[in-house]
Image (cartoon, rainbow, N blue to C red; front, side, top):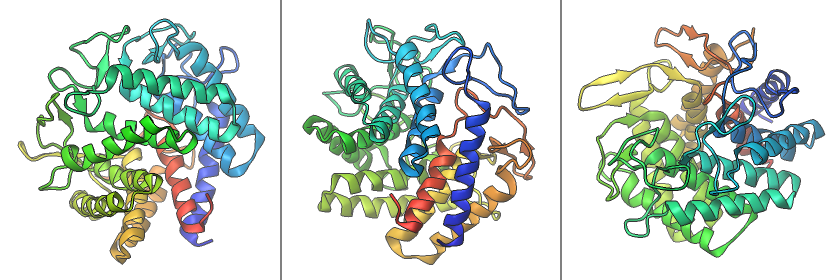
Length: 392
């Protein structure tokens, strides 16, 4: 095993050890919704479907790869908490958040959250072969498709009220911007993972549709960047650039093409993914890290570096290298890892810093939060190991 894979394997185990030690809530079930930089749980912090689903996915994949029972036990914990506390048995779907005691808190139906629930459940089924988990994933796919699919213009709407009624405030955006690249990116990621374990005809149709929606609507044909928010008719809100989402999409879309196995569509996806990786390079600093965001209209550039962006750029550039054979992409992936090792891995407190400023100072924020999770960094480590050691 080459050095990059060996080091990522060790880091993956270290990330898992952190989440195993500091995040389970043995008194109230599930996992803590917030853990401070000092590794202290905030007992009254609400719990998000994002965090719980990503924890479920993380430990399910870890069990599937390492075959260590403790990881399956942790995945079981996440699954049962998600099913018992986030599932809306009356209206269908899952809540956006619950209280620290597990009561419904924000009950609106956010498709971004449903995507991660499907992602986690399908991975848990792949690891455990527990049929009720697959049934739950199917149930969520069906309710999302029933209420969220836009049969007129294509794609999926952003969010709904608790009873699936239309709402103006979509949490991540407001009307009329009721579609987003971010939600679509994670829906296609989730549907692709579900299709691996449940090759349903309608599900495949939706994955194909989403792939084409990215190629034809979500990705600019001029810049090969994702446009962030849209109205129902796919009119983009602006041309703000999210470098992390661009590089993340460049490899997730290729993953979907591989799963679909459609050669003609795969060739088109491959060309677009390489152009997206090339476009993302304009956000790289001399230190090898992508900036967070840039607004061409105002010239404002957010030069903060984020844990999830660095994780995704390492995988994205490695994927571009494997697709193209161009050595500069491999060098960018290697440099991404060197940056992560130097600035993001917290050798003292564990896990990763969430943000590194442009001067390379680390922000000592929460280690676990509504959004801060083990998904991006552990997945990046897994992808490097898988791609460089051919172990699936």
